[in-house]
Image (cartoon, rainbow, N blue to C red; front, side):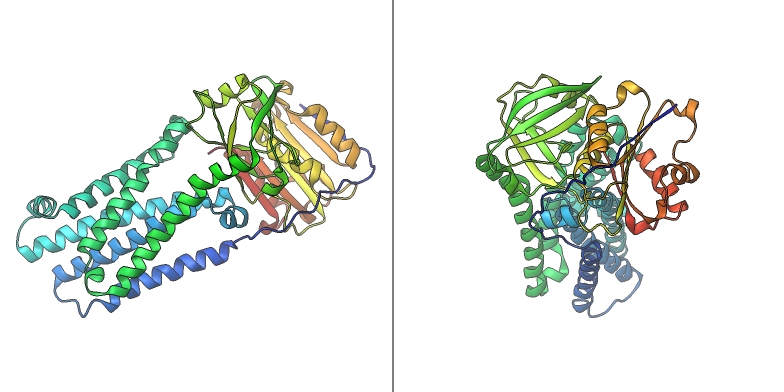
Length: 457
């Protein structure tokens, strides 16, 4: 069934202006990565006087794939180093997709490197592949390190596969990914010790050191030191925990000078609550209300042991927060009218945007999808905001088997007059987000004006 609560027109709310943050453009980041690929191939070319027989072709193909794998793993680590310019400009969702796709390339290149090198050396030494594999690993310690690095990369790739990842707890998957650091370190030593390019070319060696040490510096600063620095500066603590719906609670966090974080509605932090059971794992939760100078709010649904434990947090619990992250904000929006589409707990960042995004009365619409009326979070708040802002609020409640597809192009056009002229923000389960995005495109909305984020990490 569908229940609609249109708001009445009154004065428009306005978000407090914030100092503009540095944001990396996705196109520029991809161009920089591509330039690095060209530079790596050029490095091989400059240090390869010629290629002879079939064995030499295989060996040099192995050199190229090895160099590209080494470069790619550094890029992957840089993308997930939580650099603010990347997080705000490219967006965590897109960075995660790039990281996932790049991870498959890294594993593929590393496996190809190993097979091609062993095959090429076996032909040169006139022996079989198995014997050559044993010889390389037992004779050259750095080759054995590279073999361990490859096994670690393959293992991380396996647990990240689409059919396996949903079966793992987020915390388990998160900590298994730390083995990527060990794999990168082992591969780095192997490349410098046995790579022909680095043995004869000081410039190439220096460049490789600069690449890896530069990425290591980003990781240490943004993933480890920055959260501690922010904790000391802002002294975050839990002030209260409020139930919102069955299995859903809001956690209010207070601190000093929180406006200096420059967090925007729609963004998220990675939260580490310093209790005996929760301190070891940072989990991503979006702000569910515009942040203030002394208080922030997140809203969490019971989706596992960690999120379930938040309901029992005590006031005064210390908090470490990494962020803010994400480009799911109203910054840079192109259209005057705004459409927000939420599914389930995806209402969290959209609730913050619904209150704060600049829009005239009648130019703001929220569509909220839930399986049951008991699952509607912030219902009273949303209706109050709709009334105060002159916004339109639609609920779509009920099992899909009963109500059918709630997000067809025709349905969306009927609910939102002038739909193609809106800017759309979509957040919910991955399947719903994909379906809504496709429907909006079919209804005539340009791709550049559709922003989406999945709450499934």
